[in-house]
Length: 569
Image 1 (cartoon, rainbow, N blue to C red):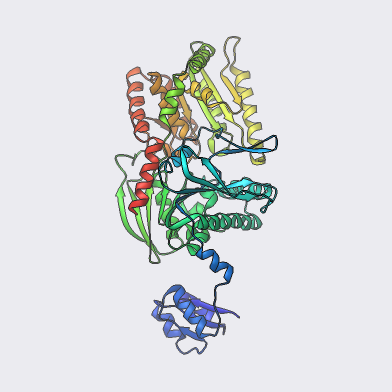
Image 2: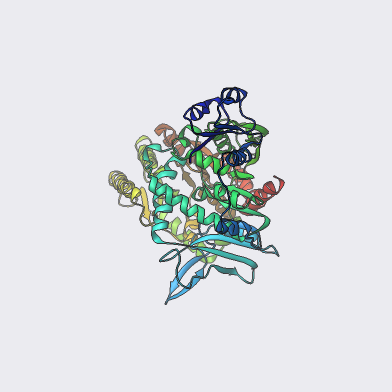
């Protein structure tokens, strides 16, 4: 049985086929007039789903909920706050056949901040994957405590995913289809329908587990693009929930985002949220434009972006930001919340005697040369090649700097299995070799290149020892390395210069950074020369201004601000 339904004159051709039809309430009068005499078309008074259900009943189509679906709808958990985050707040490590939970290796300040919301009596659940041999492993323990002492009412709801699930859903599809689009590199995107269906399957599982965890009227906080489709599955299961979503990445312009074959489904899913947060206002406006290209939008509220955000003179600046929209009768609140860092952690690290010794060793290595620190993950969006080419050009244009500057180039390897980055690594190796071959002397090497993951204490020591941080991604959602450098310099009591790409989200937040266009070879070398020759007073003023911003908007403040905005919505 085929039944067609619509509400605009554009849908007329469906009814002309002779199928049974439904025109829902609130439809265009022109459509109603044209189908009024068609005997197989039912004109409903109710809008949307209500009209379709009435029409199905009119056509004799029986509609019922299956017992399994009904049981799923009726299930309620005890958690007042549910975090849906693809990874758990700990690393699962198998030692001698025993599964143990250990503190994450990455110094991610976001996870401790999110855990902080469960420090009191609030009952909570953290929905995350657990790598298993199958989706239904024998003896699988679904719920495990995080920390009974500090978070007595928080448990992790583990979702059993296979290595193939994680490989397709996360390593392949998310990185090959979504990542290039998010950062505006559509030529690198690969779309695979089978991978999309696996992505949907995993998101559905996350949504179903979230629905089982949440108490009546609970708040669900969903994190990042890996879980884009969770709201679409969750809202029908639990219409009582308040759903918030935060993007930890950029959000591209609508003409780029709409390249995704599934952009309609993704936008439709995000519109099931009550609140959607992004790093900066530009990403909010990009999202609104993407929604507008999909469906009519009414802008309900907007707010000025200054003085917190740079509005002019920056590629990502906008002067006003949409803060509430209405689509199809649903009101969705929007906001900009740039993630902060754990400034206290960096202060503690810098003052450690062992780290002070590391700083002294780096200074000895520099031997009077100005240190330029560059720390980034191996990824084409980070602009590693453009940066090295600009440094080579600097030495060509300003030969007086030869022997007086050293680039400490630290690149963190990509996760295992990310074949897409292997060519990039080969090219980086080649250019580093060429620069050192051209300009090295017996006493000096222009590029100190480290292709490895350094302990965070070593990273902080490099921040503290260097005069300039050179952070020039071609695109970046925010960039926390820039903020970490500023916090480290503040703790040492010395001034440093931050060079930041205009296309990093942090560029509109960190007043005082030197902005550069990583696509402009002349801008890159010119701004780097400006940083290396900057006077002490200007350097101190810029560094102090950025330090105040980083301290005021630390990661705890970010979490509190986001939660307040969600509660207000």
